[in-house]
Length: 364
Ligand code: IPM
Ligand code: MG
Image: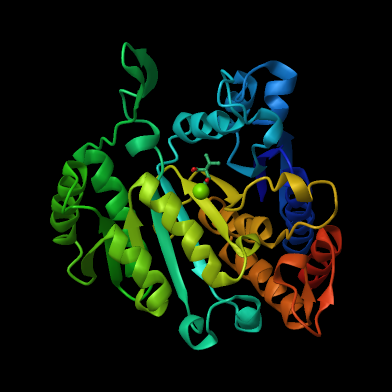
């Protein structure tokens, strides 16, 4: 089969991890007889430097003409000045919004051979395997009013957490659909004891639940959820939550897997269902790690696993996706580790070597 893929390497370690994912993708294409046409574009800090915009129009247009988007990372200290008119992160947010990517899937899985790479107790994290569904195009990130201004009594700023019932309904449905294909347990996370937007969220979630009688729905307050994730993470199967809560909780959850360098993500423009290909953007959940950039250090596994999610959700190539995941596990099983997941007695490798090893296992 033929697929068109937009590749946005971005900043920091983004280009390094993206090229390893492409290497593994090409190996997968060779093995299974697929052709992936790559279209490269600018986003983030490099785009600001070259064009003045964090998301150039050409990039958005190109992404829209492709079947999926693979993104490295955006941002870095060079573009961090709070007084700057444009930030690399604006490009990412504009892309999410511009492509209608409302559903952000962030699976958190503890690989048994990495259990000693985390600083949590093995008995707590053993068997952790859940998936976060984060709403990605609403809430505080996009709500209006949103501004900073000067008053006679000093500076003020406002952000708005706003949601419509349609926005809540479609994201909650993503949670239910995924739970249906897993252990049929959905936790909806909110702050309904305080926030109006959360009270609406809880109401809508309860209404949607009527259409999914086979799935058990539990409501959990976001502060309690932050605690439960550390105290008893195997409690969870699928979680669904709004944009900002999801941003914070998924960084927390990533620590269960040992390193952010292990966690992939998919941002989808529709509700995933068996047999339906959905447009999506795939990126590691880690950032641009500017201090590691150019050193052949970064762990490419998060990006490689994101690419595997792309094979599954956007291209319908589930067998191919499983082959990539199995290759990752095999290489970890053999003891190869990047710096972030290194432990005693293991073999330390760089970004490129890790990519080569995984690509080498695809050949069959
Ligand atoms: C994430 C990141 C982004 C976000 C930043 C880079 C804008 O933290 O994808 O979790 O806040 O959504
Ligand atoms: Mg984040």
